[in-house]
Length: 343
Image (cartoon, rainbow, N blue to C red; front, side, top):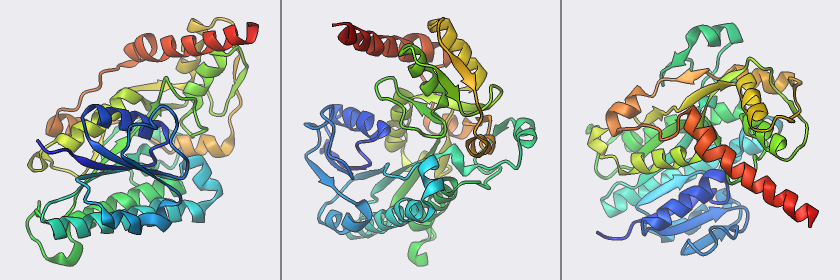
């Protein structure tokens, strides 16, 4: 089997670092791109790293023949609300330029380039919490009325991906044209890594709470205790991307898939924090803007399409997530910190 040539944008982020490590284990030839230099954890793994503004450097990638593109680079939800025009430039223009590259290469090489796009539950939008609660578990085509720039960007880019992979040039009636790019998107819930510190995302209140508890610091949660959305362990997020990458195109009945693992309230996160760290000081001080954003996202999503089409199933339910993945790692992290401080 020939070596896969893979581009990973946003490689320095939480998903990017974990994905690069997994692709390296598979023997892929990896090219990475990010604004920042590669962290030491993955520095030796890619064949090349392109540092700089992705939108301004797309032309460089026309010299490569990638089999797969993982486009992870994005301006995330909280930051996108503050700098909306810049978020649109990064999230939409960057994605569109890469889609054009993948479409051009697919036709030139007579082989569909796979384009994996991490979308988000931010693509959904509920008018109020009562409607959200009544809706419960939502399907991919339900409530697609995002309230944030980030959500609008993600939903639009999903539509762009479908367009460039099925209708670009309006030359093909075949639902799986062999010379057009192969776009596949996953709508991720809130993702939690045990190995990286939360970066201030809108769904980060759960892990932030537990990191603060482990470090012996007070934490004021920016949403109220009854706020509920879906979450997932980072290893399951990487597993889903690799599974969808490998799924035969003819088995896919959609190009956008929900995936789910478990759903928790902020209050339930607090209970877990107190159970693991009895001295934890966790209070609730809802921020109206951030509360409004989270209230527009679903309590949980229906991932039956992913389960049926490509065999999706998470490894980490809520108990395994806390007991086998997250809590052991952050206890080790902050035990080491405390030891160094004492020394």
